[in-house]
Length: 376
Image (cartoon, rainbow, N blue to C red; front, side, top):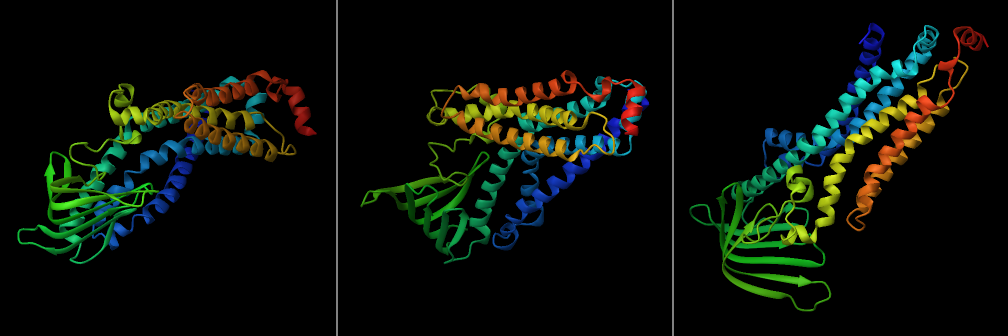
């Protein structure tokens, strides 16, 4: 890498890191504020709060990195244009391909970052969040819920017990799960206690009943039990287990789905969409970087407005990202949309490359004509 290329790469890298840190910080704060109840009503430590909120960073980086790259490329090229550095580079014989080279190094770095986060770090972080939330629920039940108090363990899940028995057990337990408006489940038990099996925490209920009220049915279905175990992570029975959501499964697990599994069979489209979305995410970083270069990669005089080119590039990036989300959402209902997930970013980067190399631009002018254009 030459001195000029190192200077261009360094300028773009600093702009990218600044944009990524700023955007991620702002969004992370808004996400963290939604978890303040961990400190206030759920009695968790500051360390647990920071750990849980920090685990959301990989998913934020996957979405924000391509956007930060786009703005970094625009910032660097706009600065070079404003300082007439692009004009000097062109006059000295620097080709578009050579100018693009340091930006390609930056784009490759971001593509690698997004790929690592999307394929490995993001699903691992969601898995850790799941385990941490399970432990928080168990800890909340055993240590922080007061006798006679109704408390929300999760959105739509209410927990209550009458009194604490000797040895840490609970008496007079009431649990209502309203997360699914089509099926409301209510658990009543004379006693219960939390137990740990492997890495899973369960609430073991004794001598009680479970009622399920389905929408449109006048009478609830009722089942009595002597002993019943509830998985605190998903509130599913011990026998059924708590199936991992698509985003919580590793990429290797998504590549080797067992179609005979009930959960996989019922959610196969969502699992496939999650898999292809992970592989397509790095392509958006590549496309966003090239779109930014295509917008401002040509030397312009100070009288030539750059606002319209920037505005057009921003519209293209927003439309591209919305189209990507739409294609991913379409995959569970239409398997053919898998091709669309990859086609959208690939067509965008092909169009950007065609704009950079295929259209007449000021890089093809001779130094004399460029000086004449600058004088005008």
